Length: 456
Ligand code: SAM
Ligand code: SF4
Image 1: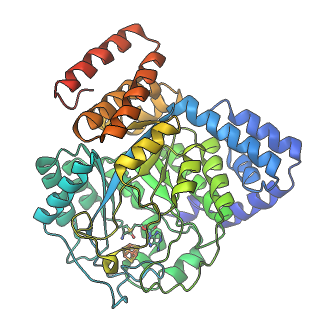
Image 2 (image 1 turned 180 degrees about the horizontal axis):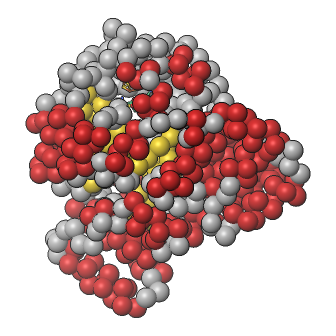
Image 3 (image 1 turned 60 degrees about the vertical axis):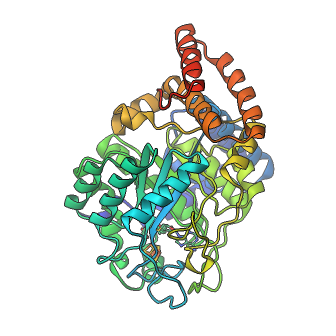
């Protein structure tokens, strides 16, 4: 396949140059148009990426808040990463797991240990896990991942497992699909070929095209929910954000399915990183703009924020269009049972526990959701996109968010979280307009109070 059909660097530079020429009025018109929630073109996204004026930026943020609210309501979906291994044969300059790092304590968890980790995560109250691992053909091969997924579903009350793993063959993706994963996530890191080459000097990850085409192989294998992103800080963020959107629009045009999620990881210090400084620093203000531009351009796509960012900024970004966050995370294999800083992939910044996070989310007027109903009700890929694009997904999600949050409060919540959570649930119930759905939700809440689980 000619991968220049997916990412055309010259076109990206051209669009960014054109974007600089827009007048303030033209930029404001684009922001106004985005409020229709039908998304924006690459030309329009490029123009918004060039915004520096504080007053215009505020308008951009306002529109992002408005769109997030219209499409997702005030829900914030919550998950935790589970690292199964930090062994890796690649040498990504920025990563603590890179093969050349002699100081890292290496460990690949057995399937039994993985289930223990999942149980420890569940004990915090989580229902969604993102499985993450290094790439080592002998240690983190597909059978290890598949065995882990199956064992977690059997051994813990975890209801959705998403996977962030190296690109693989169609045959291996089929195995992953059969194991029942939710979203397959893969970050291109940077879409800029030359920088990609420098950052990934050896190992199988050095192959840019094999990585770029991974999602199409996943599709061929029947996995229709995918997540993408770039590692912000490796190259000019304007180029990489626009390239992410180009990739997204390519998938949408060809398969009628855009990304289920876009992640916004920003480069963090890592043990023995080969990068002594961030090549292209992304400021907090830039990061806010990035979230807003994604929200306006692909309104139906979830935006994922991890604990790489510090608490205050995370709280701010929640208001700008982020729809999923991780909480209480550890980035070393076995981390939920034993913290080993010499085994982590990178340093996290937001150390708040899930329980603390739930209180903050409620205080800010958001509704925490542990919902995993969609993929179990076959609302994935194109079916999900159709509902999301028409803003109908809201009708399923709101009651499910309330029910899963209630279940969390009953079984795991501290007294303070329960008090804040119950108040939030009462307010959210009032917002359900359909009387039949409201009545059903109230009945289900009573059943959950009596100990029933997983009602959706
Ligand atoms: N090893 C697989 C791969 O590289 O695709 C699976 C996931 S890797 C462990 C997860 C992601 O962590 C990478 O795609 C990269 O974007 C991110 N990452 C690596 N080093 C990082 C760092 N120092 N700071 C922030 N994120 C980092
Ligand atoms: Fe290995 Fe992934 Fe880290 Fe690269 S980013 S060194 S492939 S774990």
